[in-house]
Length: 466
Image (cartoon, rainbow, N blue to C red; front, side):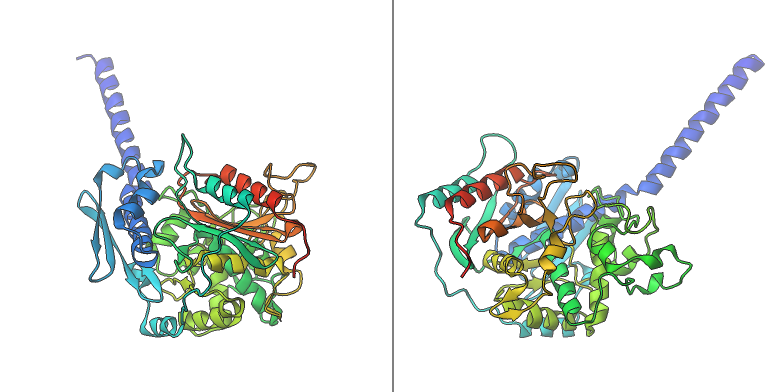
């Protein structure tokens, strides 16, 4: 072999080895095993919620949430779940490996092993009574409203199935119509996903009203205390508005920091607070549940008493005060409320929550939130359609039309994955709750929601609230 051919062979060999090193490095960096563990943990958690909290048959819970999820397409053939009803536990694995377990605790909710609640937390949860709804199902006499709900429940001829579970319409402070899918009723607790972020907004508002927090002051996060730390200028307002500038990308890939936070970390708030800045606080908008978990950590410290303290505080100051009957809240291993995604309540409860904001923070003659807190919460951040816990539909700067065509310009809404929505329309004195499992990212049947709101808005009068 000539020296030239030998040198070329050595060169090619080195390239091949180099490529193998790079490939191996990428595998170590991305850690696909971690992503698979996150997938099985997510499935166990959501299945646990559906089966043991909402009372769904296991296969229905799986099919509605995961069977058509494009992000799981590669993993689906190897996924396997087991329902242990005796221990109220769901175990999920992939080809017999990467097993994850979520366990249901009565009056509390579901938890992965590193989030297992303590005795004090469970005692506090059991202290909360959940009286059944005494009002019978409200069926509207208005054919337009009945037709509107029927259209919203109807499955489209093509595309993702809606799987609508519950719709409640509240007008002038009264429930005027509601409808539930088979297996659901006015007492069924429904997982809110990111609607939970709006509950965090309310809890912050209560502490602001009590003079215990200031959203425009520096966020009381110990990790940022040093003046040399560039994060020390962050405020609660920055966090509530998703304008923290922290590197907390959320893309549900299983590799992103929020997925790691939610399904692999015991202390979510601390993990999120360790994120570096990638933009100056208060200058850029990026939606991330990590921001909400940091706020939840601030709430935990301000209220005191860990998870048990938060359960008592939230029920005394918010849920009981506005008549929410079926609330469950889940916490991480550091006793921080998982306020990004893991709060449950019935559809009627969520309507009462929306009515609190429609009424400028007043319920049953008692002021719960600061005056104009609803305006603060729904005012857009920069040119983004998000406020400080609610999405806004006011026209973007320089535009005349609302951001979401067909939705009233003054509407604002809480929104969660798979189509959990609380829409508030002040001009119509209207609150519409729509919950379901529409696996159709990123819009989750927004078109159907717009039609529902338009149909109901057209049917109701503009009479002043009682």
